[in-house]
Amino acid sequence: EWTTGNIVEEQVAAIREQVGDARAICGLSGGVDSAVAAALVQKAIGDQLTCVFVDHGLMREGEAEQVERDFVAATGAKLYIADEKKRFLTALAGVADPEEKRKIIGREFIRAFEEAERNILEEAEAEGAKVEFLVQGTLYPDVVESGGGEGAANIKSHHNVGGLPEDLEFQLVEPLRALFKDEVRAVGAELGLPAEIVQRHPFPGPGLGIRIIGEVTESRLEILRAADAIAREELTESGLDAEVWQMPVVLLADVRSVGVQGDGRTYGHPVVLRPVSSEDAMTADWSRLPYELLATISNRITNEVEEINRVTLDVTSKPPGTIEWE
Ligand code: XMP
Image (cartoon, rainbow, N blue to C red; front, side, top):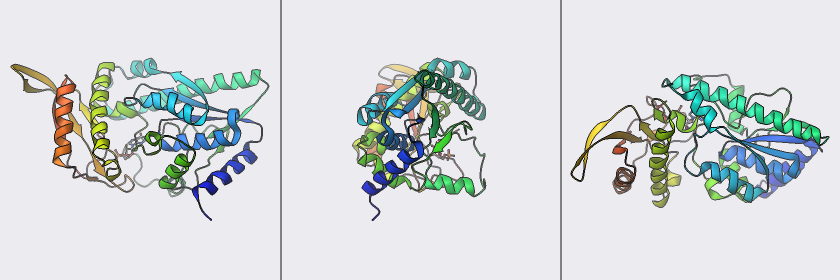
């Protein structure tokens, strides 16, 4: 019988068999897939696994803590944290072009991960152990997609944080290869991962870096993080999380418009809400969220985030609009 408990048992046995007493590493992105893959492998081989979290500083509010605190609390996994916020901000300084931003983030991510990797390898060596395996959260649809030729590839240079450089020195452990997303969520819940991790909406590897239209700076990240946190909080509060595939909040950082607050004129930035409904992100429709919810989000963002004086709604389907703005 195909139950979540069976999947866990089977995979744990298979991982033990594959890895033996060698060591493994696993990149954590904050996303569901890498978290569940890591939790499975941790259950199978315990401290032979080291998880790596590269904090690029482009996560949403609370997300780094979710990895650093909640994931570790739920799994007991050994975690190596690379605080690389400065590296990414420096590399992104002065860059506004979307593809260039994506390439820089992808490149720096691989570099940062490789540095972490080297440190972990050295540490293992000093203990007389060898790191031979790399864990990846590849799902069944990823397997099918990469076998089926690249159809509409390279509209944007996607990169998967957590799905990493195809590292030839490692053998891959891919415990989710036979699973669909909903099964992965069920396995994650079975393993005791918190709902905030297991039910998380998709979030792009380059993070908020591609949701700031214009140059990425620390202060812009702060503004977007605050607005995004309010939008997510209210969506969850409304009970509509499951109705929506994801809801990017986009900061139009180079745009200003005139507003009024109290007796004063404001000259602030707009944000765009981009709630979409979708089955697979290949196509999407804009979500018809209740006006009351949109009103609450708008009121709260413009009241609580000083630099934002206008909230707009993206009513474009995909195609022609992509889900992300960059
Ligand atoms: P678009 O914007 O192409 O997005 O309609 C489709 C889905 O992919 C996500 N996305 C990414 N995910 N790395 C990722 O892991 C990326 O570089 C990336 N770019 C977009 C996007 O959030 C949506 O779910």
